[in-house]
Image (tube, rainbow, N blue to C red; front, side, top):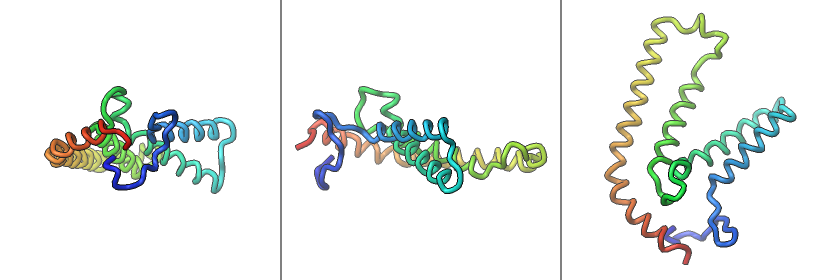
Length: 150
């Protein structure tokens, strides 16, 4: 927004098309593919990567979901990306549901709760650490946003 790099954003009739929209279209395309012709083999991996890209593009601008008329620089977007990333990391290491009866012993359940608490503490501390940076940078970013394209 400071115009230090070329404007690579897509503008349509004077409107900046945010990458949230690209993510929604990619997620819609992946949904249609999964509904009408479920992929197999290497196409399943390609579809999974496309889904991840669409999800990332969409959740990166999560703050816009909550505050449609708000400014571009919103803390909710950062928080959403870190929380979704943490949840996906936890899910990546969770065994399939058919193994839960034998996998979830009392010891593993306590360990999982402990790890979830540590992860929650990490994200809370990260948010608190970034708050002073956000308070200093946000007015500058909002000023740049109001100036608009030059």
